[in-house]
Length: 255
Length: 245
Image (tube, rainbow over all chains, first blue to last red; front, side, top):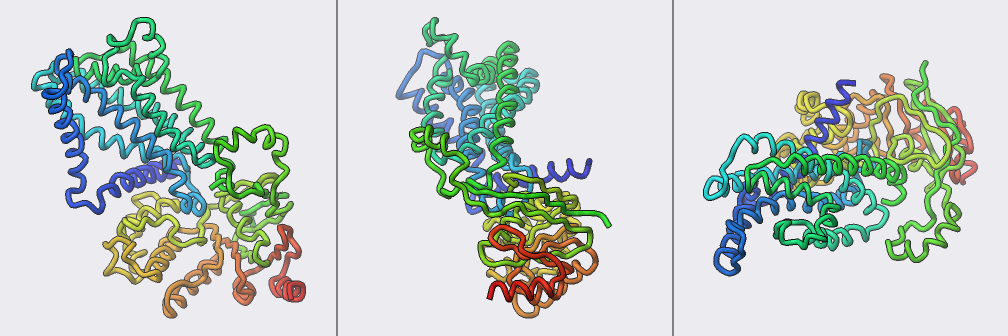
């Protein structure tokens, strides 16, 4: 029993490592890209919003990145894992192992990329923000776990549906764009007309992204948002697992 | 003797249209699909029942499309029966498509570890066994190069080596008895034969009737998804030759 658990854990570790390592396998800078990518992204926004487009929000670049980096973790996880089953046909057809590990590995590998962007946010917080406090040490792990659970639930449904209908991955690309604009990432909640705000809270990402932003930008932990996000995450995971296991039974017939 | 495999009335149907409908067609034709669901199917296996005892080697013969590989994938667990039950009480080691879990951009060594874990070892066990696996495959000098640079033979040798070094309890073999050049073929066939002789339960699907006669203790003839005959290999092969010829 213990050995079986250890074996699964090792498999998840190796699949995650594979997912992560393969990305840069044939590049010169290698893993350094994981840091360079968000740094360059931050630099572009910094220039854009300092010089070309000035918003009324103080320190807008930091405000934006504090929610944009966690969002990127979510969206890239969902988009990439949408193909994780379809792309591993031979593995799925010829080897027996828990298939949901393929999906989990993608999200964990993307988490590693996200963690590389946290130091950049810390740099912003120290130079002109509210600083880095104990709240970060408590908040980051909590929110990472919540988003992990939430994303896993969503990704399970999308990846397994995509094996039945290959249209799903294209649909997801478009929907992701819609969800992005319906989540307070590039704008604050206060910019939304009062009567639409409850509507925005129906989007499970609203509370999650707001909690991330307030943590990084204001060095505050929003327990109410965290509570809502946790409930949503658990619901998504339960639904995701149920759908996945039901549809997985006929996986060999559709792949 | 204990039973390792128990198959009771297994039926496997595939949707007759192999190309799954896109989302649009699915929505448009939903009423029709709903009405006709379960009708347009192809039955690959039809109420197949048999069992395999520990230490037995069961050979499965039959023409192309008789359902041999479908049966093997049911035993492996990568596919599930539409009806009936299958119980397998041992760790399954597939020798189907060698190197199915290999990734071209990972090195030989990385692939060895990943595949050993995929086949049921823990990482610690895999690391401990890696030197043995690599030595057996005889491709030591290239082991830290990505496998995309390997020749086909090297690739197969490494994959074969991983599979036979993961303490198989139940071997599921589809044609693969020997891989690589002549000397490695001898070695790999010898390894498999001695694994089978040492009491590893085996299900061996093959068109090589002589190999079945040589290594199997029992044979099963599949014909269009049904068991036509089961029993002593020589007798089944004889009947198959007469019937198929």
